[in-house]
Every structure is written in structure tokens, then in C-alpha cells.
Length: 204
Image (cartoon, rainbow, N blue to C red; front, side, top):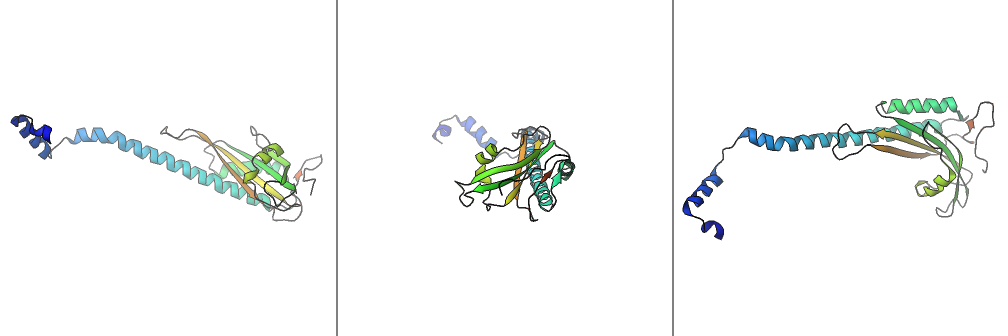
């Protein structure tokens, strides 16, 4: 305030007039604010779309896991390939997808999360995706729920290569979901090999 009072009187009058003015140029104001509004709108669209796709992806994973859990005679390669097709259909086929299906078991200390022994009975994956190994399973054992010795769990994993429509701070990424489901039917969930020995859990 002291700085303003020390200015010459004509300058002070000009500043007061400027402060009281309410007119302006709509075109100039629009040019200033429109880029910001567009960036906010596009960013909101991209982030909303990413959450929407992730939600669809998760629902599709639960659907596949539930379908597998209802099988009583095991599954074969044709069944697995059909699951991959269904997964792609449930996610509208807009992005590249991969599927991995595994059966795991606990062979010892199954009530202790730190000491339990987990093993992969068998695993199948689409092209480009490695099979689930016991080493990988043990490394990520913190996400595996507790289940009794003698039981098995179905592990349905889905992978989607998501690329946003616009580059507004969200890079392309792989959306991953893992669902654990107990078989609804008694007995083991086998993978039926045509003309070869079926794959199943050996230690239960």
C-alpha cells in the first residue's frame, strides 16, 4: 500500500480505473482458458476409461474362474482355448488379452501362512505368457488365501494390454487380475491331455 501511495497521482488514478473496470475480451479469455478446460476434459475421459476397462477385466476374470470351478470332469486344451475366446469377448476385444489358468495345492503346514508349502499342480497359458511355476507361486504367496491340506485352488489370471486413447499422464500398461476359487465339485481338477497322462495334483 505504501508503494502505491508513493506513485505519481496520474498513475494512481489509472490503477484505480483499471481495478474498477469490468469489461474484457471474450475471445482473449476463451483463448486463455480453453486449453486448460480441454486438458481437464480429456484427462477425465482417459482416467475414467481406464477404471472402466479395469472393472470389466476384473468381472471377466471372476466369470472365468467361476466357470472353471463348476467343471467336474476336468478341462482340456479345447476348453482352455474357448475360455480365452470368452475372456476376449467379455472385454469387448478392444485390447490384446492373455489368460493363465493354474491349479495349486498346499502340501504341509497349511494353517500357517509363513510356513505352508505351496505347489503348482499344473498350469496353462496363452501364447506369450509363461506358465505359473512353484517358485513364482511361493514368491507371491502373500496373496494366496489359506486353504486346507488335501484341497486345491483354481488360480485364474488375466492380462490386458491397455493403451489410453490420449497421452495425458497415463502410459500404456498391462492390467493384471488374479482370482482364487475353490472347485465346487469333489475330486481333483485335472487337465485332460489327449493321448497322454492327465495332469493333476499328486500330493493330496
